[in-house]
Length: 526
Image 1 (spheres, rainbow, N blue to C red):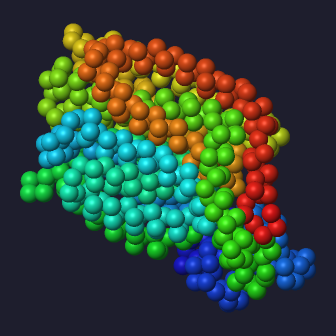
Image 2 (cartoon, rainbow, N blue to C red; image 1 turned 45 degrees about the vertical axis):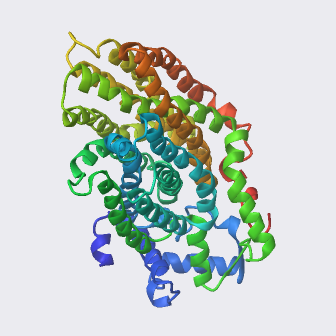
Image 3 (tube, rainbow, N blue to C red; image 1 turned 90 degrees about the vertical axis):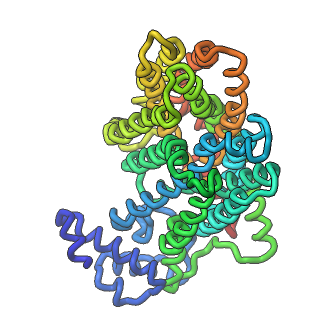
């Protein structure tokens, strides 16, 4: 099998790919058998070199490198991409509930005889939980591994979907939505934070864009799919029954997928070789308390003390909130004004799907721009180079907002506001992708925590906009409600320019970027 896979690569790459494939098999089987890895000369040379340097003890700080043969970035490309693909599907799955709830909101209102604002609490609490969850799950995945956090979170997510399907009252449903928001948030944190586990910075852009595409696909497809899959017998509860079934599938998938956190994978590899990795804490009370402190405080610490993360989070408070603002705007524009059917109005979300697909196809060009900037900078990558294309694409944000605001009524055709919405989606999605790549480049050892610290203000913004949008559309015309947000969006390009031109100076103030964060991890010698 290895020879068949090796034939896919050029002769200069074959030895390296065979070596990496062998290491991956070794890890999965949990064996240090010389038969499985001794046939590869490169691995043998590496092992011999390590024995000469230190026959028994190796410090973990010397092993956190993509040059290590066991590093997940050195796994076979098909294995790495299959992991990313499955976790992107998981992101679509967990985002399904919050974005699909709008299609069943009126049924929930009728079921429990509550107002629209009360029913919307299910949506807003789900969003708020999605923002708070990563603050703990992100740091936990940075030290405990991605896989255990995935499994436990999806298990809780599945269980509380049962509670949402069979609630005794609206309060139980609201609380359950908050809990599934917390549990489901692990997909956002782990996927965005875990992509750098599997791909070097030069090639991480495309898998990150696939993740952004999955987020957009889930957000856009959920309202449409929810309208289709509501079974006549079960009604709105069918949304949660689907979640329970799919959740069971993903629990099985997670058991099969390997761990990707480099520090865990490399330590397991070295232990299998009979070496002691120094710096891994023992399971005593002191070390457990140290880990608990890291998990409960690191996300908040990064959000409050890292200027670049705080500024990006505040930017996305507005930008991500606009996504939920448009979820509400679609109905008064296309259902009430243009007299479309419910399914016709729901289909207008497909414009965002097209926009996200264009972004995904454009990402290889963005990666080429990043590599070119790295070459010009003497081989040193600048995270700020991620925003090169955004200097122009971000202009679509305010332009699309104004186009939607002033053409969302006759005599303008219904296509005009759809084009405006698409322009906003392109700019918003591209900026978000640039920020995620920027954060994982800048904080490689704390990528999960960095993404979590960034997402909390984002989801708070979405929670606020879910309610504010209803108030605005109830008291203002659609034109001026959207126009008000459009005038605020004029500041968006200037914020992106600040990240590009002054980001390096802001990063210099940090004590957590790059390998500087190693001393803050709950290791034995820290």
